[in-house]
Amino acid sequence: MNKPTEVADSIPTLQVQKPVASSRFPLRLPERRALLLVTDFVLINAAVLFALWVWAVRGQMAFSREYVLSQAEWFLLSVLWVVAAALSNFYDLKVAASLAASGRALLFITALVFVAYLVIYFFSPPQSLPRGVVLYHGTAAFVLVGLWRAAYALLIGRPPFHRRALIVGAGWAGRTIAGVVQEYLSPHYELLGFVDDDPAKQGKTIEIRNSKFEIRNPESAIRNPQSPIPNPKSAIRNSQSQLPVLGTSHDLGRLVQTHGVVELILAITHDLSPGLFQALLDCQEQGIQITPMPVLYEEITGRVPVEHIGDNWYVALPLGHAATGSFYPLLKRALDIVVASVGLSLFVLLFPFVALALYLDSPGPLFYRQERVGKGGRVYTVVKLRTMVPDAERGDAVWAQKNDPRVTRVGRILRKTRLDEFPQFINILRREMSAVGPRPERPEFVAQLEKQIPFYRLRHAVKPGMAGWAMIHQHYAGTVEDALIRLQYDLYYIKHQSIWLDVLILLRTLGQMARLRGR
Image (cartoon, rainbow, N blue to C red; front, side, top):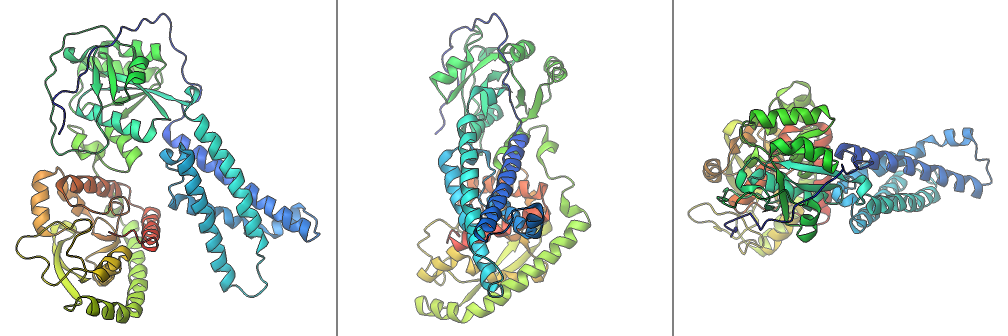
């Protein structure tokens, strides 16, 4: 249960005589990702040059410009490496800030590139490709990128690289974004505290929220007297779960200059007061970045915070998304046909063995049909391989759960590999589904969820999919709160649809299938 209050005791007054120096390199989040990508790409190409140099020395050839140009196709290894890095979340800033996470991702990337090369080598004519180059390249790339990423992880948390930020608004949205930043980007951001015009919050510390949304907003009345402006660094040092309220909108300009703030996170879900609006304009004139809370939350988590958009609903909703155009739907349909054709061909080959295993494990129908809600709210029928005992659901619809006892032994394997979904390729060819999109839900659950979750029906703006942005991040939706988080992922996908994102989702889904990480 939530605590009834979010305000702690007041903390000591901050005495400031002169402004604090700003961070020297307060790179924005896209700039940090670009720095990682560009530096990786340079080092990977340097590894290619190193591999070619070793190959030339071992073959007693001259390592010249002409020699390098004649072997230019080897630089495609750099492209393969970057694609593997994208699949392993290597450019996630939370991963980049962790030595352990970066090391695991780097091992996976190196192994993936090596396996991909072995596949190419196997299907190439004998003696047409050398084996040593990829070994030299993999070793050099692992060492060079490993050293660079270790330096990044060790340095990014130091003060010269911090983005000092204030959160404007200490309400539910402000506390949520504070929790998200501290969970995902604590080495990158230095959150100094809140600015709020509520007199009762002045001089108090506010408990921040974790990154998981809740359906209700249990706002508590705060009746503490006003007290002096606190010391933000002492508050952060005392408790990572609390941040101080440093002042009101009238103090904003002074706080920005005093603490070397480079970004204001606007967590106000209602109309801005004239005083706050003017204060924000003044800060923007000083070159301070002003970021709406929904925009930052979306950039960090890959989810749209429908619970916290308030009057600014247009900031976070998928208006004018790619599917409303003309070119993208054609490309997406072509991708659907290719994926469905390949998937059905594979299903036909595997079906005799799957059918025999299903029958021996749990005699009964091999398939089952179920109604789902598709684009525009239209109801259609999906066909799936049966993974539960016969008549597993009697009466009202029941949420599927992790380790559901109704699932058979073979059914559990089918779910892990997602082979039970393969008959839905027929739904794709019939234009009822797409290869990528929000997971289709049952009409009974849709009727329930649209009453409890704001904007829930917006997920029906596009065709449902067999793979999806939500499915690669969250396996089960067994509660209303899980459904809310899934909706946030779905809306992010709808807003940012592209062929590249679709291909990325498909590749990550294949990776989950190979590692038996299906639902």
